Image 1 (tube, helix red, strand yellow):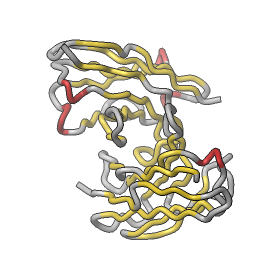
Image 2 (cartoon, rainbow over the protein chains, first blue to last red):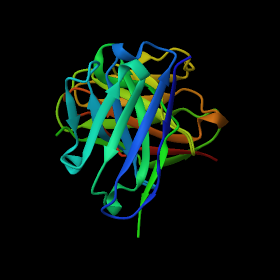
Image 3 (cartoon, each protein chain N blue to C red):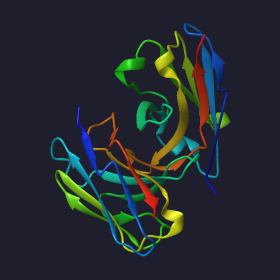
Length: 120
Length: 108
């Protein structure tokens, strides 16, 4: 059974930093692109970043470029999102998602989410 | 960027009703569209991919159709457990997918 478990969320002040983790199991992690998607309170879904199977390509939504860094450790079946210079508008539930076997297409599996609150 | 517009933004229907949600793309995306169900307090769940392919384990009452710029998700006979918000997502624009604004389905 595919499982994605996010951790690392919490309350942080504006300008602060936080690192989210996504632990994967039930599939060959190194065979899939992985993605972070976020959802602000009461709002819709927003793609944040994705990373290629071997970590050689990384892409970000414009609003987080230069502040967030996506990474992965295939030996540990884990993906990460380092978030710096956090803003109040980054407050959201952050979901880890596994892409389809064909690459950056649809998201076949999702985690339960990790809540990040940016507030003073 | 390719924008997706869903309609309606919310609806209320009775158990057994047929429900249709529409997703319009700002430019042609062929069949590069997926539909997700998000129940309250949960992560999204894939229902349909490639516009009309049913994900394994998803009830057959969920039907996707469309091509190009107009797509629909139809729930053939609404069930109580279908209470959720439904999102479309396009994957034509590599590497940045986009989502529609969501349609909240309530049960009368």
